[in-house]
Image (cartoon, rainbow, N blue to C red; front, top):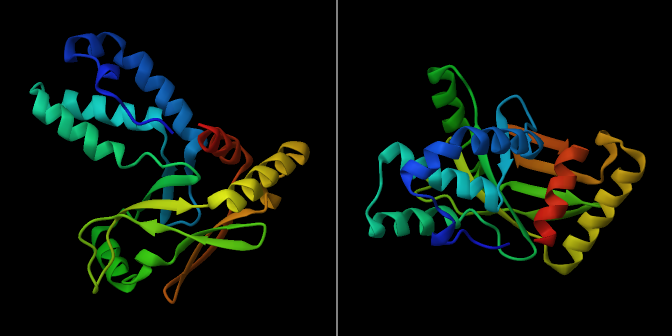
Length: 203
């Protein structure tokens, strides 16, 4: 998947002119890319467009105009774009109550390296690229990559093709896993997400 290039970014004034249309399109696209495998977790699978939007929004919010700073944002956010034969997701631990959230982040210590995708019965562990992970608690945001390799991509595409034929969200053959003493999750990916991720793997 192609990384965001400098010449794709609009100056702040030009971005303001198209922002509402661009934002509406990204919000619409993210609905298909967002997945809540449990009441506490949600994921957004990232691609070129989601990252481009995040960079433009950061430049707008922080009023960044210096070329060195713009390049820094590009390099930082481009890390979310997956390399070939991988998928990329930002995972959020979403618990509204602060005290409960803090307690759960402690209880979930060590969960950082238990995320995986299961495709046709084979597990593909996530590579957690979150910086500053601690041993006594987890963090509320994780940056995950799922290396699939040639066989995993082929199995994923076959699973998505099967879902396209029968339209059954709950029988896709692709599930998101968490295997931790304080949280066990096995949640099938919906067909709309599978279709979006097929496009990612082809990009």
